Amino acid sequence: KGRYDLLLKPKNILGGKEGIIIELKIINGTENLSNDKIHEKLEKECEVALNQIDEKGYSSVLKNAGIEKVLKIGIAFLGKEFEVKFEK
Image (tube, rainbow, N blue to C red):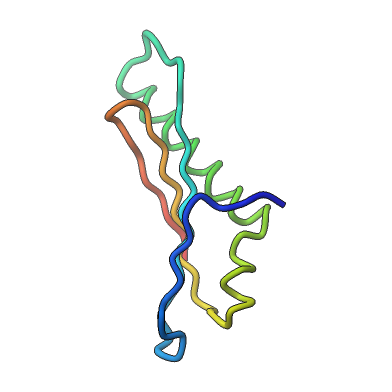
């Protein structure tokens, strides 16, 4: 099943606040790529991170705690470059 990289659970679930799951991806070995290609690769890795949250059922931890709203965040890094995508 695996494990999420970071999970933030609201202290008070009665307020209808959302839980947050963050999945991080680091990209290595992209010598000689243009900036556009680097950002393309980063965007793809963000999608992979979001899919991983769904496929591995990471949000079940929050659902089991009674938290219905979940914000899923995928972050991909390459050195100082990064890309972020999210889904509610």
